[in-house]
Amino acid sequence: MVTQKDLMVVPNQPRFFRENDKMVFQAKINSMVDKNLDGQARLEFFDALTMQPVDVLLKNSDNIRNFNLQPMQSQNLVWHIEIPEGIQALTYRIVARSGDFSDGEEMTLPVVTNRMLVTETLPLSVRGKQKKDFIFEKLVNNNSATLRNHRYTLEFTSNPAWYAVQALPYLMEFPYECTEQLFSRYYANSIASHIANSNPRIKKSIRYLVHHSARCPAFESGKESGIENGPTTGNALGAECQE
Image (tube, rainbow, N blue to C red; front, side):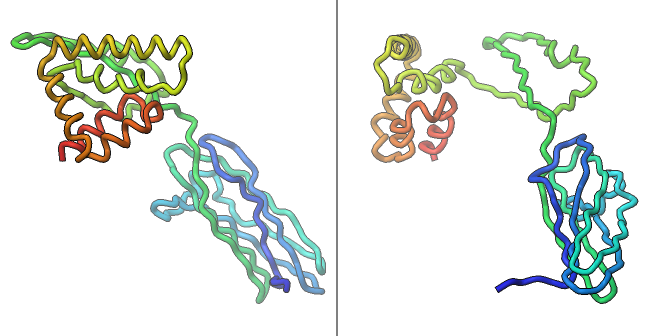
């Protein structure tokens, strides 16, 4: 069984759009009748999140194309567009009409950004009853013309040794016995021993977690998954076990 209409529009859309790209959007208009068809095709673009028209942003204000089809023939139509910045996804709608015949298609495609997320960090070490001033030089003296600040985050811990503790499973739980991984295990266990002996509260907390691991499935599953989790696993496991 073949399903078809007397007039059919077949867009040749890409899999995705990319910011600042200049491209040609093509569509084929097919006639499935034994007579000439004269008509128009309109291509419109919308912001997929708000469904507001964005043809002006894509320089697609002149979005109507005329076509003249011979019996059982097809014709290719093209639109020249430019993809703007700041839109996460675009919805295109193309409709072709000729007399009583019409056909259309609508689809949403993602817009891939050309920007790269870069994280800059500054450690702030301050002892009790101490005051310090810090200058985030990489943030203050960045003269990039394309820089766009995304998020500013401040993390605080009263005992920075916890960061080392949370990273230890990543160094310890290796599946092979090569020299590099054996040294990583030795290094991690040496650090763990030093931290435990010099920080009684951390040692007590670790013993508590080991003792209650049977009541905390997340702790055991985290140990089993080992290296796949990475250094930040400790945060999630600790929060889940404390609840």
